[in-house]
Image 1: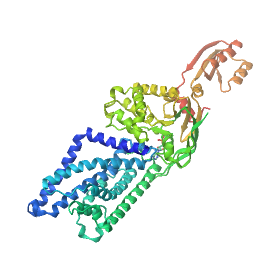
Image 2 (image 1 turned 90 degrees about the horizontal axis):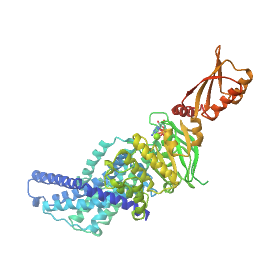
Image 3 (image 1 turned 45 degrees about the horizontal axis):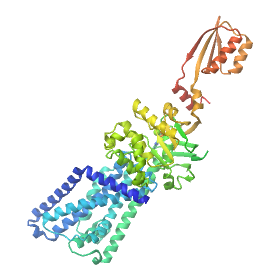
Image 4 (image 1 turned 30 degrees about the vertical axis):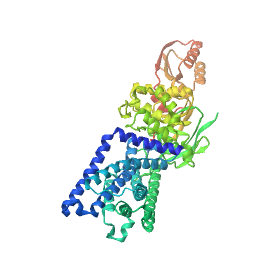
Length: 259
Length: 319
Ligand SMILES: Nc1ncnc2c1ncn2[C@@H]1O[C@H](COP(=O)(O)OP(=O)(O)O)[C@@H](O)[C@H]1O
Ligand SMILES: [Mg+2]
């Protein structure tokens, strides 16, 4: 019950921000959509053709874009989010929760994810309407798959958040990594057998198999799904552990409240 | 009396990257009883914030024990956090984009309280802190004093037994500082919470607390009731100008009673310099002089300077 109270508090604050700052929400969706249009018409101009000619590539772009939207929020919640809380002097208040900072953070991440599902859904609808390619939206397969895919990104977010607590000026590194995420998603999976060891890469491919290939989660190759679970668990685990490590340093040096 | 907060040999040495460590808190020990309001007084850099943040689990102590109502905070941090809330120095402590009520609900939730169950208390706090008119205003738009009151309310809504307040009036203008002090006084008078309040300002501590712990350079210098400490502040420097000279007998009598008193004389005058408690001790000196038939030409009096006395305590000159 007490754990639920923490989660509800985080969800409510997200909902309030979404509503009160609806202009920000709308501009975020519009920005996403505009970036998509640039990529879309850009690649059409490069390849020379109509949406129909581009087939798989185009669908791939839509899927990649969706994963990227989720990944950005997952990454930002922990990295930029941690910096924001430290700057505004609320981080220490969150630390003093008797349910633990871990749970407070997980609740925050979950709340962000839930809100994110709705905004990404809108962007997705816009993208599909523009391209005329209606993809398979099997929610029951997609939600767990998306979560599994971005779990690794949460790990990276934790790592960067921890780094930010101790070293403070990491903004540019945060920005660079944000674009590295795009590479993980957009690089062709067939490039090298090592691609599957990267975060996001294998997950994006599996999500594509659901959305484009119209498969369900259970129809996907079990080996791939298991590999994804392992991949995400490793990135998430390492990220979380390093975060704990940095948090300890920050507590020792008295840096939690400073920014 | 039941002790709810006990700090034993708390020591904090901050490691620094290219420098030698800073000894911020050095074997500090004290305890606070249930519903007691204790001031932690000391100049800037004395170690107040470090002590408070160690108790709140935000800074890892180098050594020592922190007991919060039977729970050792470093061994059971989550359990400890059920018992303590803190208003931290210089921080906003609240979300600027949320209204007072939303802030209160959020921090109640973070503490694990269901909003439904704390609604009545939130209403009460909004009333108590005069936030009623501003209930729907973003915290960012509130005055600095209002924000600080809200931050205090957000610490209270956690409903912990112990409340840590680090320089709660710092940075407020005279009027809002006064207002916040009144709220704190009222809270203290209700006797519902155990409060440890830090300040570098004697007046704030004197106003709100029953007991004071003075720290300097990370060490406890004085731990006494505020009333006792205030006695030190009532001491004034006096200079008596007397006609003629004192006989040996009278001189002995004075020195016996006031060993620190200083005598000096010119051809026709004698001067006595002494630090005396206003009222009682002054009359005692006068009585002795009267009994010796000495004529007092004048009495000079220097007001006690709070800062001076505070510095004297800190430097270990007094007591
Ligand atoms: N994060 C930190 N790293 C290194 N030294 C610090 C840190 N915080 C405080 N100090 C030092 O520790 C001492 C005590 O500081 P502090 O606890 O903030 O005192 P106060 O709150 O009484 O002003 C000071 O000398 C201060 O410079
Ligand atoms: Mg301080």
